[in-house]
Image (cartoon, rainbow, N blue to C red):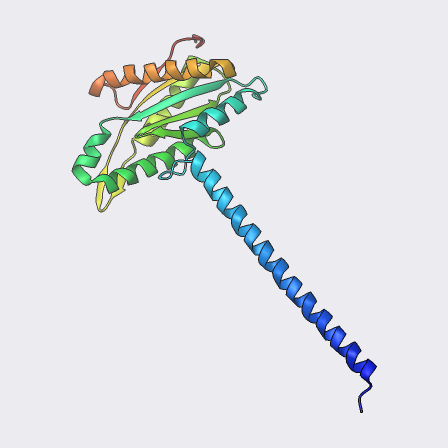
Length: 216
């Protein structure tokens, strides 16, 4: 006949094992739930600060990130760039909004590739902005970089068996500090609209803001 004490001890051990297993399952479920909530929170934060179509930072994030960059530039010049596609409505009208979205995605990828580790964002619609580190504010260097950017955007884009080309009007202005960001973007924006007003007699269209640029 089994020893009652041994039976009781075995039951207690089994109960302890079951309790430990149940606690472990609860802990794993809790960890999984926490991980799920953290992933949801990260996704919400990303959605709040990024453009859903292109994946670039949105307008709000651009200003926040740009202000942070301007407080820690180590003396390196920074250039504000505003870029707006020319006659983009014609893409939507002729090929449809889905094609227009593909053009915006392609332009965003090209802009990000051009900028490298620098900050670029989609401000809205077909307007983009960037804050680019520059070795100098020398006029020739900046005009060359702007021309390269315009040509990069203007490369043909394949859309459902057809090739389209979009050009961009570009304006830029040096930024001297966090307090000057809004002013620099305003000057870059004004330069961009002046370039756009030049019409088809310059392609790609670009204009360098003359304020604080060294003559060379």
